[in-house]
Length: 249
Image (cartoon, rainbow, N blue to C red; front, side, top):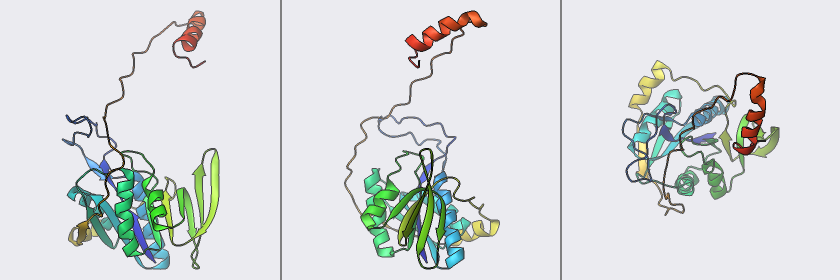
């Protein structure tokens, strides 16, 4: 089985993001970067499929040289090959999807895996857009996937208020949700091996941006809290504030 896992290199969840002087990008000074957490579930699922059916796992990233750090983590986890589609310019979700899809068409994988969303922009669009461009069925927000030897796939996915079971077949695009599996930690042997594994590079297929970032701004600071009283006599005033100011009742 040929398995492709698409991963993204994103700011660490504990990094304090600052808007750059240009007002449309983030200040990268002092920012720590990491593999997008949902992508870790995708890599793990790809490795498990390989262990069950054989074949190879290829991890693909689109971006600049800094993305190699995330690709090497995937190699350390056990991926066989890594490919960087180079483009230092910012891309919208469709531009990323187009670049990935053009490469995946040539790769012809049986299974393509993504995290359900990348935690930088949280668009949740790239995986399903790639599936559309490839003409593959797709299942999103997957928490369980059972692939049979005949290529049939039964997935369980999260929906509002419950779970949904979907039956489909390979070739297929899945986007992974937390709970799909428990990602393995890279072993020392895997980390050392990943340092010597080559990362193939090629230019990403060009695609003009369809979305323009007009401005970035941080959310307003939270207003200071107020204490309206310490006993039951404060209840009427609290109700009034919730009704007239907060407008939640």
